[in-house]
Picture 1 (cartoon, rainbow, N blue to C red):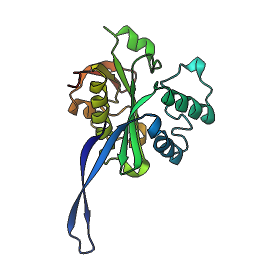
Picture 2: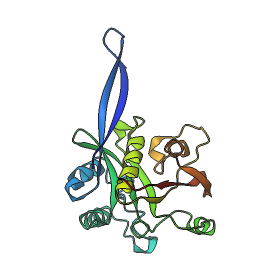
Picture 3: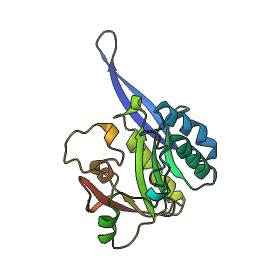
Picture 4: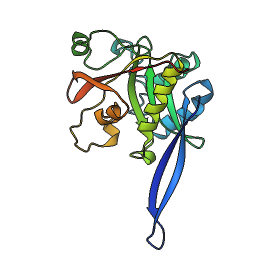
Length: 213
């Protein structure tokens, strides 16, 4: 599956004229054949967030080793076994970002679990847990491309109720490196509905994704 997203950039040439360039980002499923590209992106950023390798939501706190090498091994094994999913964003053949998603068995960990479960009417079919974008591509639409791609991948897998836990920024500008869950406004634009607050400045949002035809 490959989703084509158009990105428009503008810049000034040597005469000071504004030039508009249109690039195409592609979104591919994180699968065994995409592991090397995913790993290269993670390695360019020291394993991401201190060596997490995007494993935090895969394992409960008691099961963690908190070591970058073992996190890398865990992520590799899960991807090879088809038990770790993400929408992986490419600029050409360079992976530049992702959005991790999966069923609850794949992603059992969650922040503010007690508060979350107290307010839950029914569990979702899928969770969208964390974004990551290459430092050189931030604020260029990578997160929106990843979200669009993840929803299409979920639709291809049969669809269902999808939950996300973005930051409710209240319109304030926040460093992109802290927005690992995305923003409420990003999900609103994608058709998600606000359900309730969760923790400090985060919320639960939901959307029902129809199966692809």
